[in-house]
Length: 135
Image (cartoon, rainbow, N blue to C red; front, side, top):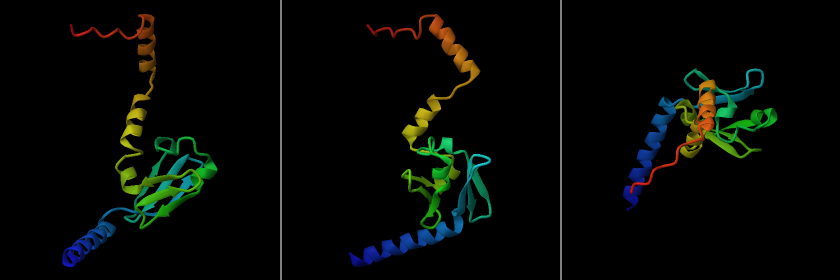
């Protein structure tokens, strides 16, 4: 049993070494008030920036709260203590700005002049038609 556990630990450590060499991680992070962006400098030399209103938990944060961001662990996470928000750097790079449920709600909030016009036209007709029973 101990040999199996030692082998699993060795495999996990090797995975960690590979991840540290190959996956981008944060080397610094800051809130750019002028442009309204969270800016992350990465270990691979790239910079990634995003507007805070896209990320779960940051939508209503003040400039002061957004500026109080710190890097977690080996650069794989970001943390805002005052508002208790943690975001994954690999997740952000993949375009995941929150949980699946949060992202689904955000997708339904999309607005455009065409969507507004369609909603008004539908409302003028009495709204969404009632479902017909399957009798």
